[in-house]
Length: 574
Ligand SMILES: Cc1cc2nc3c(=O)[nH]c(=O)nc-3n(C[C@H](O)[C@H](O)[C@H](O)COP(=O)(O)OP(=O)(O)OC[C@H]3O[C@@H](n4cnc5c(N)ncnc54)[C@H](O)[C@@H]3O)c2cc1C
Image (cartoon, rainbow, N blue to C red; front, side, top):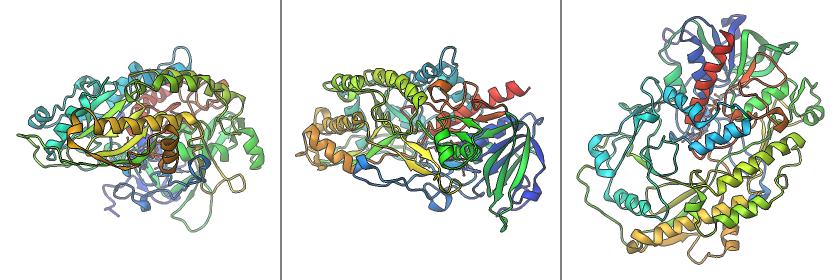
């Protein structure tokens, strides 16, 4: 435990906090600390953040800093169960994540506005200023950048945030030149100037890391450490389990302290607003424990209904991936390299982020048409009510456009060797994250419902085929790579689909959507200003409000959404 002086605003016991603050933020994770910082920076408002985890060093995927949740068996993926990764520490998932720092495309954010309704400001143009406010880019090393075609544009980044994206200068071998050049020549490939330009294609991208030390740059380092504001307090080891109301007005929260041996339920009040930032897995739990959720579920769990909001815990989405479409080089590619990099930090990273017409020029239209012809509600779980079905019909129209667009990322490949992992960034299946009705305060039940919609398998099959074409045709043909997984003899749609169902992992630890920002009649939970329908002074700012996955890792979008949320919250309470 670090010395008390610099951590004076971290509280460990309920008696150390005041009775009332201007704002209560539930969850000291990625979004919670971003908004906490912004609401306290002018020194006028007081904020208490309640965080279930403790204050400790960040480490990727460290099980002691994460919730221990396993999904229910997934019948469409051979009944396998999957680890549900979520950070449980100050900094939240940004403290344990893979630091891959990407954002989606213009078309993907514009779809958020389309799903939100007329006059929505959640467009690419409406969110871009918050990417700039939220993230500082440290440019790549000029000599290395020239050698490897690493381009960037400060049109898409800011310079003031203490959350950094940086490339690292680690040495790169000639193989990266060969891979880059071969990928660039794949039919239909584009090369945007910057990973943050909102475009698909082949690009180098930063990690969320400090440009000088290459240490993780995350919500705690950027939005808590070193601030030492007397108006910004953090209570660690606090499990929020309910909301307090005066009529429709949220007035505070109740919580249990993990630092106290008794099971006393404490409470703390908010003068201006209660802000939920417990993440896509746990924000639905807090609402449901407070009687806000699907009425059928609340009845089953014997929780008095305060507001019937069928969308709580529904519309659950995550990216999915195949860990390896395996290849071995016959001849290892090389190229001359004059400026490999200084060796400090990780080497810059290269990604292929492409749409269906580039992944599969021959089959994308047939896949899109089969999807368009589906009854949109056909593959939804049975707990989806009429409003959620209407909401998914709207998504179905968007997804149909997405399947035909070059500007929406379906396939992500981290380009670094022969073969590798392929991701599907726009799954059509939707799942649920709900409490156990028999014991709703225990850990959440996560059901991806992965692979329910056959389009998800169709897309993965084409992703595998793209990797094969990349490895065995064009520039790379001369290196005579041999496929080790699934094996070049697995060729038919049926065989590839069967293999895919055996190996797909339905999560890249990017859960979203479980309290979506869409109209209430479409199963929405929050409105355009992130206020929970049917309540006053209660908002949600975390990844649960993202209505639809973007084709990118999620943390950068969480920061941008939180920055926009902070402006909205400040404006309505000024
Ligand atoms: C292992 C892993 C790898 C990832 N890799 C990447 C990557 O490489 N790149 C990328 O961009 N994204 C990645 N992500 C995803 C990204 O980090 C998350 O989408 C993002 O951080 C979520 O932010 P959030 O604010 O919604 O929730 P979180 O940051 O998870 O914050 C929620 C916080 O609420 C707390 N909490 C929950 N319930 C309660 C309660 N009842 N009371 C009090 N506190 C509570 C939690 O302990 C947590 O600290 C990864 C995530 C994980 C877990």
